[in-house]
Length: 100
Image 1 (tube, one colour):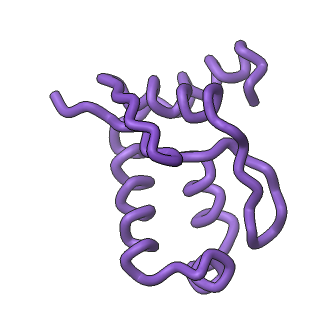
Image 2 (cartoon, rainbow, N blue to C red; image 1 turned 90 degrees about the vertical axis):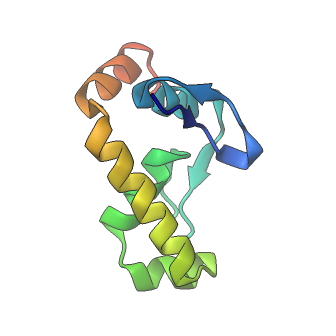
Image 3 (cartoon, rainbow, N blue to C red; image 1 turned 180 degrees about the vertical axis):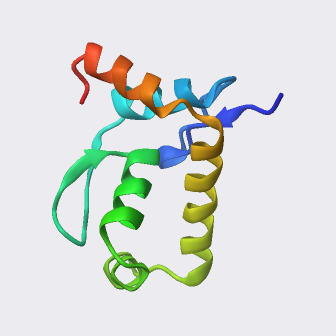
């Protein structure tokens, strides 16, 4: 079984379940303000999801001075999380904690 690493600002905390990693990112780290639209979202997975579902790749590249490699890395993270995670359970737990 592979472990999931938080990865926010050098945080190397590791989790057996991706859901635990997402909850950690949401609860333990500062929120992220989107450079494209100014929305404030949880950092980590939710920030990546916001960027790629609410904005075009071109907007992301311009706003974050990113290159195609950075885009691919974040798209890969998003895809891996969504293939593995029970996102409904994550949202339910975060709502119960008052974190969303």
